[in-house]
Amino acid sequence: MRPLKRLFSALVVVLLALAGGAHAADVEGQLRVTGRLMLDGNAPRDFTKGLTSTNTSDLVLSLLAVGEGRYTADRWQVVGRYDGGGRKYLSYPTEDALVQAASLEGSLALGTSLGVGLEGRAKDRRGGSRAYTDLAASAFVEYAPDTQLSLRLRAGAHRFLYHRDTSANFGSPEVGFLARYRLSRRHALTVSGEYGSRRYHSSVRYPPGTTPEWTGRREDGALMASMGYSYKGPLALGLSYSYQETSSNSFGESVQRHRLSGTAGVRLPWKLTLLAQGALGINRYPDGVYLSPEIILLEDDEAQNTLSLKLVRPLSSQMDLEFSYAMYGTRLPRNDLFYFRQVAGLGLTWRP
Image (tube, rainbow, N blue to C red; front, side, top):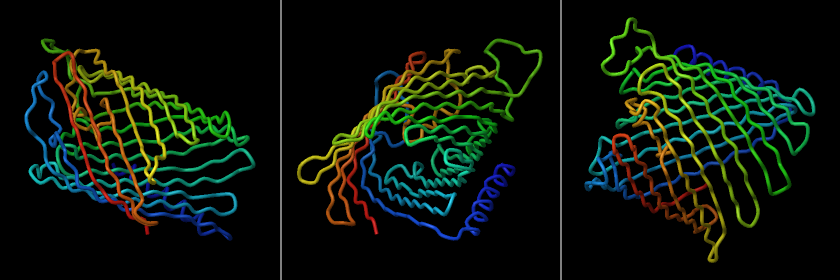
């Protein structure tokens, strides 16, 4: 953890040094705070056997603050974002959580079409069974010959710490790319991919009933590829497909995921805005089991089949009223484990 902390700190120092050399700058920033009262239909996020279910619903109070900023001067710019929030459950205090996430990026233009930069991100979740810390930092080169095309290549390091079970901790060098192409003012395509070689301190797990002649360390190859389309007009639309594969030398840790997701946003009468998001996923476990503790790290259920709706209406220039509903579900066919969760909420968003 210490080497990546030093790398992330060095990133901040370099960006601040660049800022100190600026002569003329343009500063932008915004802040918003959202408070919600929610009803969670599966507060402990339990998997059940078959389709049987128990009453695990609970009321939840949540608070989220988001700050974003951009500092631009001459040929370089710094962009940052910070999210901080918490959830308080009334009947399941073990599910209370505090979450912080931050990202920072600095880039320098080397000409009209080429740029270089540094980027870093950090996320920390405390509370419940899903407490973890996720850190990453990388350097990148970006090529943008015109307003239609941009290509970014990056290389860096990734460190993951799972506080409940250290066998899930890993460090990994990573490489990746992101390409965007604007077909027109309203239509755009994106393609991205990344690969990481994850190394764990835990030992390899072997198939049941086997007697290994040697014991090695667990190593995973993590591959991700995605492509997407977006439309911006009277109706905002997005459609994407992603494939994730983790190939492990440890029995029961390999997984393949296909995921198709879509988003839509439209303005309705009476100053209402409707936002919708849905996703369908197919998970495959080559070993026929899935024993890794990562199964309970489904933060916001992003690895599940999902459907979410949000209806927003402004009460003033600084205050919005919102109603939200989300449904998550999946099934593990090999062991007949079933997961289902519904969350409904009413909230207020304030922007100073």
